[in-house]
Image (cartoon, rainbow, N blue to C red; front, top):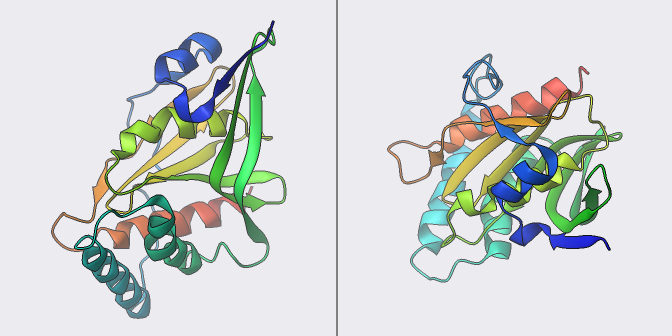
Length: 210
């Protein structure tokens, strides 16, 4: 009998047991969030400053729910990263499933936002309400990334609750391994949306050179 798990309830331990997923802490494994990041224009900085101001304003009127996070923070960032333009496109609440090699366990769920380039997943994004720690979505996002239709290529992901952002990189061959960026936060001095947008822009550029 096949055991079915929901992605939103799966744990990192279960992903390790079922797929052999390993966390890699070698900083050379995931350099894409640090190296060769594009400079933002003054107009891009102005627009992300507005995003941060909008989010700060909304914090005064809780609760800040997941759909609001998508609308106020995530959507303008993706627009600035040009993921709504050809040759890219997005799908929202895209269903997926992944099975273990012995087909004894099935994980099912819906990706909040999926950025696509032909059949390549550029970025799987999991949005959480502001009161939820982004790390609570790590196993859920990784289960989506394990379902990528291009196992021979790296898959990138991002988790955000509007306040904090975390990027992930997963490779699936020869064994599933992943690494994380540092945690970016809008409560830090300055505006870390600058770095977040630069990383998004770089990932979009990289995938189109594959």
